[in-house]
Image (cartoon, rainbow over all chains, first blue to last red; front, side, top):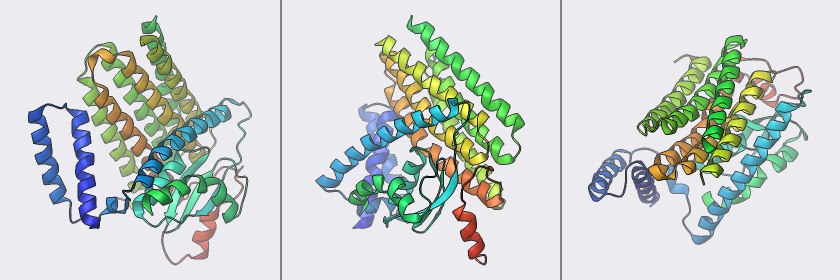
Length: 164
Length: 86
Length: 114
């Protein structure tokens, strides 16, 4: 069941990329379907990472909300970094802190780590099972709970619904 | 009017490439140079797309996509090499 | 429409410039990586988007969106790999650093390699 879902999602993603690359001409579509089927059948021995995605209406709505939350954080982080760089005194207060995540699926953890890297003042340095080590440009709380609350929990509540 | 603004944007990106290049020459460690190289390739991708549109050669967009792929693989290879040798 | 695209491109190039300035000014590898990753990602997205909506008539929005998606997904991954490698080699953090949990944990369980 998990493998079937993984294969269908992989096929859909590859078809979307093929259409973006070429066009919706009928000959090119046939070539794309054949190529995608061959690649999916070659890939079915790997770990089914896409099988963790839940496909119900609530998770789809949450993923659309997640994209907007992510874009908002991305713009905020850029303005933050720009202000720090322009300032002649260079106001930084860096350190590496440890946070804990509740997510179980590997794909969810990877997306969480990427989102942390692109949000204000944080950069994922190392992942060990459920602990992330994060380089923080302006350390405000030094224990695990405070850092988890201010870095991770903003994204986690959406990713928990999407990946379970 | 719009053309002038596009050209100014291209010039600002060129200045950005020069800044990262200075860091690549100065950088005290190998990791500094790799970070500067990473930034340089990403700015270079934007410049390739800019050139593709301003010279009206749309085929250069494929060059930009391949360059993005190769720069990603190159940076990951440098990181692997730093970590424990390839 | 063309003017809107030009202004978005100009803002994107300003972000690219600030990212490069951050790479130039920051004191150590990790802070350089912060500026380099974030500012260049949004700068590239805005630059490519502005150019593509300024020249709508050529109809190659698909390739530009592939490029934007590719930059969003690969840029954090490569900087994460680089940060991990430079901490593994033991490149020092700057003097302003407040704390370093990863080093402490590595010293505590020294037997197992990360």
